[in-house]
Image (cartoon, rainbow, N blue to C red):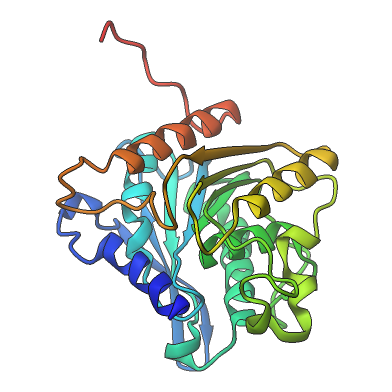
Length: 287
């Protein structure tokens, strides 16, 4: 029931998206496994020109490593493209669809980042400014790409780093160790792949978004990740939203409340990326 709830939370975020401005500008296959093609859904700035070196963001959707689609982060991607970044939302293998394990989800996330960095010149991307983000299980994947060693596709060029340069994480499943969410999903590799258990100096600066009433990822886990990051000398900004549960940040078409927490979290995401020099501050107005 917990996995189903996670998948449905993610699904409601994109089920009714019909605004064509939120559709990707193109799709690029970054990996082929057997007869499965995995693609990056790419959003480009309006003034984008070939040969540029734009900062990039790649997102991984939630869904308990079982379900979901890249559409969850289409609104975030379009927003960042409007702010001048090349933004992408990635497909990856799913346990229920492709009969693989959660391990392949992390492997695919690292493959996506490595592909972007390898093809940075043709994609118009600055290879040293690649941010990885995601929600729930997708947030775990982005964080694991930054913290875990190994779990790489065997035929890839490991000289090209799969580590992101920044992390934008929405209620990620940080603790995959014994007793943590996803322990069973990763089996004997649960500690090796758990972001909370692999924090060392030099991990990419991160911003975390959590609701204080999250029943899947305890507040204590979010706080411990932040504290361990800071102890290791890494930047980690924790944004906590009182009374909110898992998936509170999603864009929901037709939301009579105006998607207030989507906008609140996106505003903080922008400030974080501005501080890193990934996007320029918006001009101030009298309003």
